[in-house]
Image 1 (spheres, helix red, strand yellow):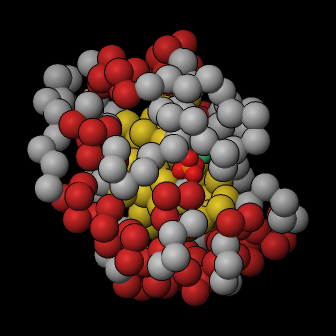
Image 2 (image 1 turned 120 degrees about the horizontal axis):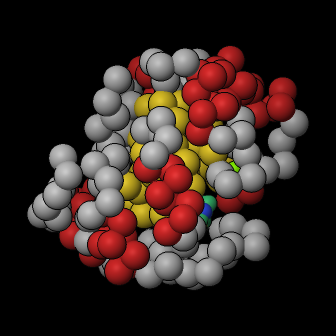
Length: 216
Ligand code: TZP
Ligand code: MG
């Protein structure tokens, strides 16, 4: 099933939430966000599953989608739409073995070699970053910059997600550079009103003309 990525992908990082994950998920979905990821590096598998189930149900009710970070097994059990794996998690193919063909697998990449490997895999989307400096990730890889997105765009028809330090003012530039979607944590969760801030991102992103998809 081909994944059509909404332009805004909000990552609910549990460490940055000031209200229960299900509540903020519902507010963001009400604001028009259609793609969420749940990321909790501290939770036990059981806790992750419980939160992911709640958010997956909210996303389903709003015709949105939820990806679970790191854990294909938890994504499967939670009834989530997919999993997002990094370079140190199970590979895209291993995640696919768990989730089967009807759910989605996203992969994080931080350099050309990782991107090429993801492009050759069964991953449904490829995330690239950090685009800009970020303090939301422990030990982030070196910043890749906007131009990296432009270069990667020419290499695959798969959806590309730009991630890392993406503020309201630079989100549109990433879509122009060829990203299908921008993934945002602090730019939304640290705003005084995350739902209102998400509306601002959606407005700016909707207005952008996307880059040519040379291979699609
Ligand atoms: N992977 C690369 S950068 C990043 C992750 C999970 C963190 C993005 O968070 P923010 O707050 O949008 O910079
Ligand atoms: Mg991971």
